[in-house]
Length: 91
Image (cartoon, rainbow, N blue to C red; front, side, top):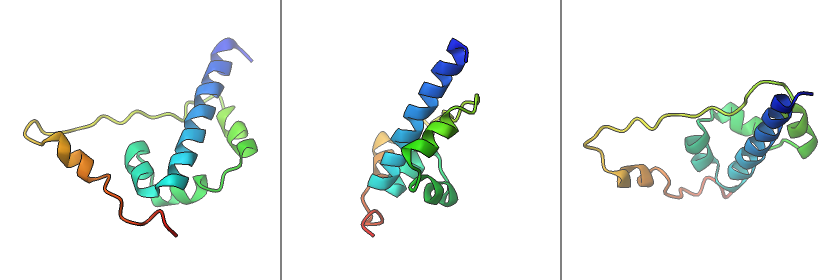
């Protein structure tokens, strides 16, 4: 495996672990932060470290950066309102 592939696999692994842990902590916030659908959340919250290692080595980036498209007149506090705890994480 080339250095690029190794670095990409490490980045993928860390991203997937972070996303899985965020999903387990607060699924709604994780959906917003990572741009995930309900199906992706359901699948990712059950991933084991071994499965994450396998996914991370696909030689493709799993990281996707989503631009924060905020109209100039929208206050940053409105984005914070999206993160208010709704009790969804307490199942």
